[in-house]
Amino acid sequence: MKLTRVLLVAASMFAAHLSWAVAKEVVIPGGAANAGQAISFTTLTGESVPADATKEDGDLVVTIYFEGDASEGTLTVGGRDFYIPGGNGTHRVPENFSPTRVPDITGLIPRGPTIKIGYTGGGDSEWGEYTSHAVELTGDGEFAIASSDDSVDTDGLSIGFEIPVAFGGIRADYEQWEGDDRYGRDIPSGTGQFAIVNDNFLNGDPNGSTGACCDSGINTVNELDYEAERVSLEFAWPCSWDAPGNGVFMPHVGITLGSLDVSQRSFDAFVTPGLETINTRSDLDFENKYYQLRAGGDYALPFNDRWGLQTRLGLALQYSDSSVDLRQDVTLFTPAGGTSVSDSVSETSLAAYGGVGLYVNATDRIRIDAGYYFDYHEAPDPTINQSGDDLFVDNRTSTVDLASAFDTRFSLTVRATLGGQ
Image (cartoon, rainbow, N blue to C red):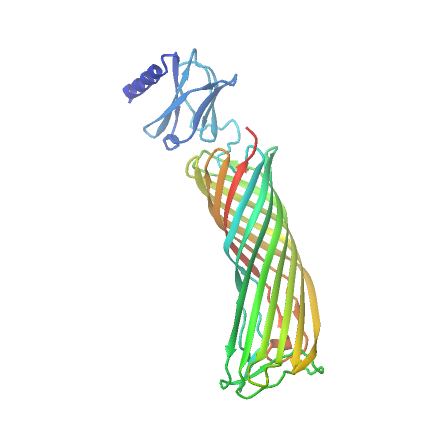
């Protein structure tokens, strides 16, 4: 191996037309795995000096070329710095070395202002179940003939920026995602008895419905629109770090303002000849606004100087305001009237968020992040307790069940650093 190193040095010096007079060797114990990292040497006067690296018995041997005597300076391997004293010969880095600065091995803290734009999709957002007013009458009671799913597929986008400050960075992000659903049934006559529940809007009847019609067909169509957005401001800083390959942990704190809007439209009508003019339309609007104080951490595990694994996990203290509004219009051959009811509630609760993904440093200024993330939070659960048909538990004619809201989403983000060194 000694002969190999001598030949390498000789070949390099010849290739450089013998312009480098001194070749100094630095041995990094156990550093062979870092042979593929970016390697450079800078003298105390700021001069960049060429360097080559080879692996030897599990160690990393870096050969530095000088025009004159070997001067002291900083050897950078990947994102980690080593102080190297002057003088010729071989220098062995101590086993218990310490970096001369906090390494930026993951790109979590950019060197300058950074903009981000991403796609958020393939997600699933839970919000609760909603049933139609069209019901089937049996000997066991009344049963809704159509119900919504308790979640909806969503797609959206995100934009943001990062600014390095002092020993950390400030991040600001805006995210928006939405989804829709349509469901219902068209049941012909001769298949059962059906009715359309009214929400105590006609004559104050606490158990009223439009009535049953023997073997009368019925149709129900339900449409759902789901929209969510939020703005986050966060400060993060490197708390602990190690050589490339061993990861870096960055705690963060921040605030988040968000909103959720769900619109539900239901159309129910008899299809039996002569009864087509008996129908209802119900419109439900749910709004949830929340404010979160977040604290958590990001951990990145680089596989090399280009890409690696990253995870995120945190908790939040959340304050939420929710409101629900319902309007039902009933037609019995002629418009029979309608009414509106509403309710609102607020509460404080805990929330959690996290995820896992990969990052790729495409260039020294372009980074790509891809991962799967989740948000879980308790949401206030407003109800409308109008006395209505006994189809609904506790005579609740409309309930949006948001005791928990769980959002999952795939995220693909491109970050571009605009300035900095």
